[in-house]
Image (cartoon, rainbow, N blue to C red; front, side, top):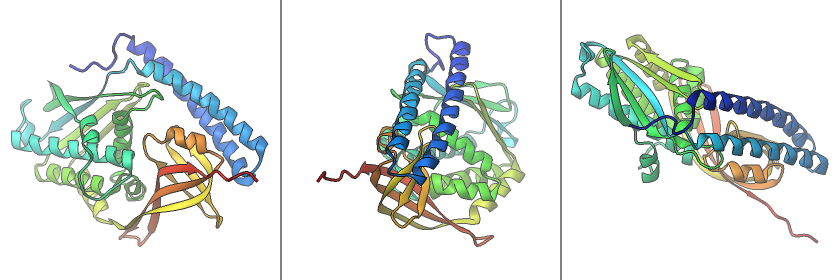
Amino acid sequence: MLKVWEGIDPIAAEARLRGLRRRLSELDIALSDQQSLVREFPHSFAVKLSGESLRSMELALRRELAEVLRHRQAEHVSIALDGPSFANHSAKLSDLGVIFTRVQKLFSSVAQAITTGPTNRGPIPAEIMSNTALRLQTTFASSFGMDIAVPSAYDLLGESLPSETFTQLFQLLNSASDEARLMRLSGEVGRRSLVHLRHLATHLRATDATLKMGWKDFAGTRYEWSIETAGAEKIIASIDNITETRSDTSQREGWLVGASLLRNRFEILLDDGQVIEGKFVAGLSESVADAFGKRVVAVVDETEVLDRATGEARTFYTLKEAREIVTAKE
């Protein structure tokens, strides 16, 4: 069985991690204020120096975070099912197989969006599939309850694809019945993830089943989601109202004037004065930190999403690469 923590007191670890997360959140706010100065004075050496000092503090905290997180072995999610197919603490295998398949595909597709940017179709890289392979560990007393795990695999900066995926997944699930919130997240996770979520909701509706999911992150924060037939209906309707009308990859030049390593967010001030903002893919933290406040060439995915019900269209951006533009000295 995959243990959550190995060789360390989990209560003490979570308390320390809550403190580190709080300090990183406070620092993220300070960096946001400092970045407002960067937008106003993009060529100021003093502003640049202040930002480098804050980034240095952030890096030290992230290294301390990673030191504790190396003891976290796995992410565990609980799934409880109820309904005619899951009575008397048993499960109808045909229904269980469909639900397992849809949950796995949904999880891997969200991870793919985090890693390489959202896509509509095509194979998900084998490495992502391997790193997001969910494993059934135990069952427990519910109508039918299961404990599912995946290795955490934290890196030297305290980043973990499974952990980030669970965070994004629960944001998506808890936004699924709110069309405005779902539209925003659809631009980040992509149509592929919405299709898998719709298939899951459709099967739950067809079998009159309810589903509850729960996950606790490294700092002890509990994430939960539940869905019944009425909720499934609403999710299906919301997803059907949202369509992706355009998806392109472009190369832009500008100043990297906003960056949150805590939230994987970026802002680039283009030469025409437009500011584009969105999420950057996993593994780009160091590049973004190094390029902050500098002029960059950015490779950006642009996804346009339309809400058929309201006619509202929005464009979402995913940063896939940022290279500093080095000018030759005269």
